[in-house]
Image 1: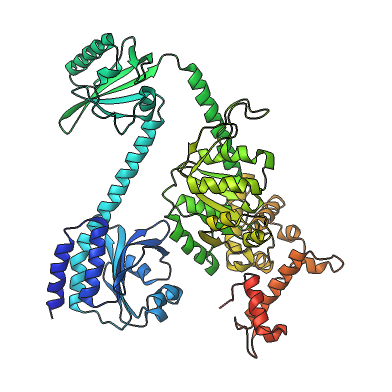
Image 2: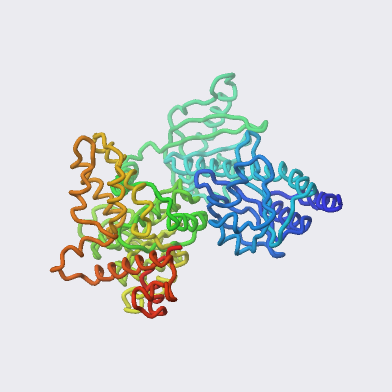
Length: 632
């Protein structure tokens, strides 16, 4: 009976010689073979998102692509909250109906998993197996899981620390390269070890080929002797901080032969028993460059102030409805990639909020997310907004200005209302997305950028392509990962939650104490169809907060009409001619009501088609065309 354990032990010892992804891939394959399971995976836990990402996944005798998924309502949720091996011998799909889609995809019948913890007891992730047949847990299974827990947890923790160190190094590198001063690091032999980007450009060096060159090459003869004397002085210092101001200046000579006077400091430090020196230098007359830099910072500040104004009053991505959970599931799957995302949905559904959520949990979260509303910028100024302009590019261009693409470098660019973009600019946008480069208006200089694109629209871009109002090649380039943001009427359970968030915001902004919603007020909010979606809800709550008396929101006045059976107020005005959108909205609501009454059944004697006196196939077509999710 111990053969499987000993057989696995040999494989595990062999796998343990590997690290990182190689170790995880060896592990999941061998544990599947040893326990005769269909699949096994190692995951990393993301506490803030309550989600997991697979580090390696073996199933059906092959490696599967890694992915991120929400663990709410899944067996994994039980695993991370348990200190023991969690086991379900059979009927796993019935036990976890909310996870039915994923479990059925991998033909799950039985499941065994255990959490992985760091030395402080915090959850790092999990390791689990899944089988298409009932499987009883045995002593061998528990022994194997206990055998691999410590090593697997250590590897997860090591990788997490490596990422933290890399992030810190990147932050430090960004800080160093963002400094306007020249930073030159040399060893005890005077050889250059590292330069920041300012020093590279000033000296005319390539950072990849400057290492090993002697610092004296970039100093005049008299300044070489001066630097040697300074180094001797700093070496003679004992205790305290080993740095000094450089008296007077050093004359720096670039690769091209141009020279300038620089002042600054010299410091000394030791690392791994070796001595290094750092020069921090600044040109004595840099007022012109400083003024230009200030102008660029003012431009960037203006953009950021615009972004902050647009963010005021926004709420978090709130919701407990199935529609929001599906949306979050997809968000977590795509956020950790650099894939282009196309957000579709009605006006006011919170597409920008979804874009910010994707950015904030992505690897680009420490860089800016810049927004462009393609429908709010005059066509004549749009190219300049996108790509910036050179001084004198057009009347009024008195100074160089960065565009949104350049400001979003390393981060995310959110293109709102992309369907409003003029055709001539669509061509240029396509080139930037494909090539990662552009020329500012009035300039021949090519600028390279690394930007993640998230676009949004309330229009049907595919139909616009048919009408030759939107480029088909750009549509397919944007439509890499489409996400539909559900309207508020499909999130009736979320209305009260979102309203409560708005109420708390307006309490602070208005300086008023507002009472929580009563049951009658909650019923009133749920009964309305919200054609203006979350934006309309926010406006209603703001007006009701302003009109509140003794902390009680005045929803009756702000809603302003009877709300019966989810039919909007336009029914109350029988003399008014409905617009096409209003008529479609009524049709959609009527179909949703019929589907609810028929418990999601479309055809048959008790189906919605019979209730609506429609042919079932016709009703099915309308359901798809109107984007209706059939209630279960």
